[in-house]
Structures are given as structure tokens and as C-alpha cells.
Length: 169
Image 1 (tube, rainbow, N blue to C red):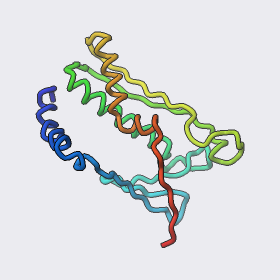
Image 2 (cartoon, rainbow, N blue to C red; image 1 turned 180 degrees about the vertical axis):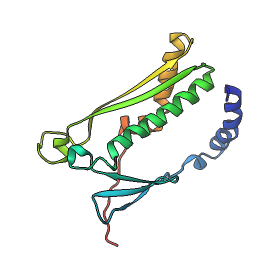
Image 3 (cartoon, rainbow, N blue to C red; image 1 turned 90 degrees about the vertical axis):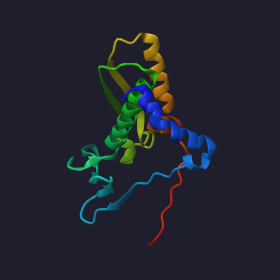
């Protein structure tokens, strides 16, 4: 896909959002079920069932997916798609590219071993490697716009309010 094809595909969507902003507000949903037999949660992905469990550093077997890994994978997926869309829109040719994310956790926090240890990632690093002949100014703009438009990156970086409830059924 080139820039003109991307613009043609997105133009009617953007026009609709400009004329009726309410149509741009969409609620994405995820759902899971607690496993009866083990400490795990079965998450419906739309394509398959992903079973998340404890990380081995907290006593897990390592057979289930780690939700921390899944968070980083979502970041990589969103950032990669965003980078590719932005490079396409700007006409920056990429011969190849890779995206990686890594984050530092202190598992003492989530296990309640040390009250001063945070629960969650202390730091996340997102890196891109691209093969391109584009000048550095274009690559700087590509990174800036990828950061600006990546939904998962912006959500992690800005930390929106999260409503949490427990109800009996």
C-alpha cells in the first residue's frame, strides 16, 4: 500500500469523524474467564483463546502467557502498525524494520515481599530498527508521529483513569 491508497482508504472515515465526531467514539472490549483448575485467566482474543497465568518469577509454570509480556506485545504490535502507517502516509520507504519492547519489573512488589518495591513496570523501553535510505530529518518526524499516534504507547505513557469494580453474580 502506498500513501495515496492509504489516504483513499481513510478519507471517508476521517470525513465521517469530522462531520459527526460521535461516530469516532468506540468502546473496545476484552473478556476473560477464570480457570477452575489453576491460577489462570482464559482471555478471548477473537482468533483463539489465550491462557494467561503467573510468571515463573511469581511461582507460575511458564506454560501460560504472562500478562506483562502481553502488555509489551500489545505495545510492539500497536507501535509497529503505527510506524508502518505513518511511514506510508509520509512516503518514507522502509526496506525492513523491527520493533522491540522491554520492561523492568521488581517482582517483590507484586508478591508483597517489599512494601517499597513498586507493583508494575518501573521502566519500559520501545525500540525501532529500520532499514531505509530516508534522511535523518524524516526519521525523526516518523518517530515523533509514531509516538503521537500509537494508542497503546499513549495509554501507557499518560495513564488514563481506570475504573475498577467487583460485583457478586
